[in-house]
Figure 1 (cartoon, rainbow, N blue to C red):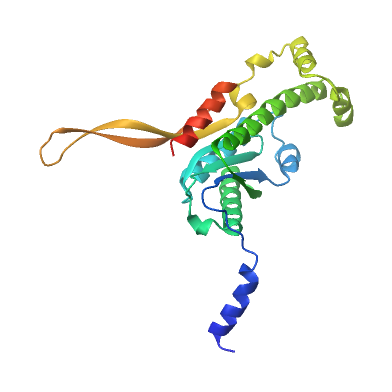
Figure 2 (cartoon, rainbow, N blue to C red; figure 1 turned 180 degrees about the vertical axis):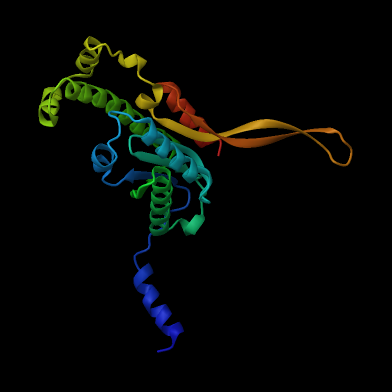
Length: 254
């Protein structure tokens, strides 16, 4: 069998189940760390519940995915061991094939994070196909609220661990405890949850910002004002409905 015939025959097995995202749908990629509990608690022994070195590795990976992979990304968001990327609605890279989107994003994230940390780490990726702007806002509200929940739970859990409880005892003591009571638990120990850094409670975002740039016409020397865009890292994202409006503005400006 000639190579060309063999090539055509075998590629069918690779591509027979390819699925593509339909035109017009919004795409949000969520990239999650694989076995990161083991990595953060045992292998690297990061400070709990939050470690600045781990945060900085996540931020470096987010920045890389946002602007250095060839994808048209409008907004990136990270909290805990995950990142979410809002792609342009008309993103056409790889023909919108899910197989390629998943593998490339997971590979890029794994490589960049591993280089930043100095140790091999891996991520998986999945694409949410969202029908409209409001669903995109709901998606990021979902991850934003998860960040807040993780922060409150994490500070409460590790307070109990520092007070001498083991993993099971701390988990059982917090079972069924309300948000208000968890806040009270922290407050009695001298921790005001309102004073916890915003990036722990709300996550970290990255987005494009257009700024005026003053230059000159090389032919006439006349002043010329143009617009340039730069990536902005935001460690103090808006709160509550202001966050919804913030995401809505990003989506509708594309």
